[in-house]
Image (cartoon, rainbow over all chains, first blue to last red; front, side):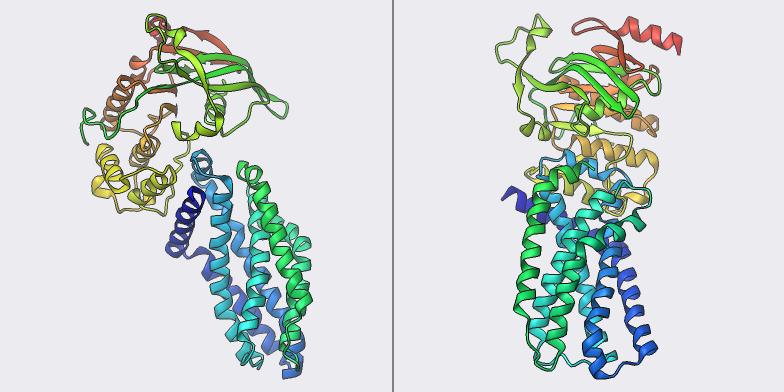
Amino acid sequence: MKALRATWTLFAKECRLEFRTRELLTATVVFSLIIIVFFSFAFDPTPAESRRYGPGLLWIAFFFAGSLMVNPSFAREQINDTLDALRMAPVPSFAVLSAKILANLLFLSIAEAILVPVFSVFYNVSLVGIVGRLILVLVLGTVGLVITGTVFSAISAHARMRELLLPVLLLPFLTPVLIAAVSTTISLFGDARELDRTWVTFLAGFDIVFLAASWILSDFLAEG
Amino acid sequence: MASAAAPPHTVQQGLGIRFDRVERRFGSLVALRSVSLEIIPGEFVALLGHNGAGKTTLLRIAAQLMRPSRGAVKFVEARPDASHADPSDKLKDEVPDVSVKALIGLVAHSLLLYDELSAAENLTLFAKLYALDNVPVRVSAALEACGLASRATSQVRTFSRGMRQRLAIARSLLHSPRLLLLDEPAAGLDAQGLAWFSATLERLRGNGCTVLMSTHARNESLDLATRAVVLAAGRVRHDTGPGNDPRPLLESLRTEA
């Protein structure tokens, strides 16, 4: 109960900081929109090509948006050494980490809520009849992306070239998530418009494993 | 600024700390070399030494923000039946590490505050993390005490250095710590701020809070010290010990400085 209350307090703090500074959302949404819109004009894909190649593009945009978004999670705690203040507070380390994971999940979900309709319009991909299943895939993929990204943000926070280091560290770990998410989205956008249950199960399993790993490593990660 | 005679909360009993042959290395650099110290509950210890002597490292280890490379740190509290005649008799029962976090306050070189949050939001955040009751009342009292009540809703980034430092001190005292660790706490404070800070320290000392303060020999708050420890090159060079008057040592250090 104490841990949940601490997580909620810290999550509210993360949201307040972000909605006050708008550092993360603005940059990531604009960056991802540029990718989606520019590729649409550059390749001018047919509807069939969009359904086949669009999911890859969409998840690349989410990956880069996520990388940009999770990078400052721990780095901005260094400005006044506020992470030290959080470490001294009588709250579990996982509360600090999970609050950041939840906040990043919220911010990336907001970005996706803007990007997916834009993608649908520019690539002529109808979402009618698949919205619920697409949300499931987006949630599972985004949870995996955000958990892994936030953990690596904590690891790379003290590195000098962390902006470069984070995507480099992150990509090998996220490759299975990206493959699963892209494959599931392709099957959903395809003619059969079906959900590939194998990949969905894989995504859920990945999320559970990495959430458990982040819980086990939280004390080590909070030490910085 | 509110009078220091009106404390928002009181400390019931200080928390002592025992450094047992503590060593801390940063690669090949040895910041602390076999430091052994017993700080008695309720003591006001002035930690002195030149830059690089190891003061900040010792305080960070005491704050549990850093682990010693070798040696051990234990937190202790006074036995209820301890003899007041013999100060060293007070240092007895060990406090488990898991319960010690809520008992320590720290004023560090950095502010430990969020620039984009207001003064009240910063204090409210930490009051909630420390699971304090009556959070709005405590936050208002703390802001009133440090003279920032009129700027409660202003973001910290708009504050002057002295105002930030006062808020950092108020944050460290919010949960009525039993062990207060101060690393050059007077930095940036003007005459009014220094007077408030000295009065606050005097009240804390009267309430039995243990204070470990790293500072330079000319700090006015040193007059409150009941013990002085001088570090040099990571070792304890002088220690007046518990119950001895630290003023002769402090005077000689002032003369040296």
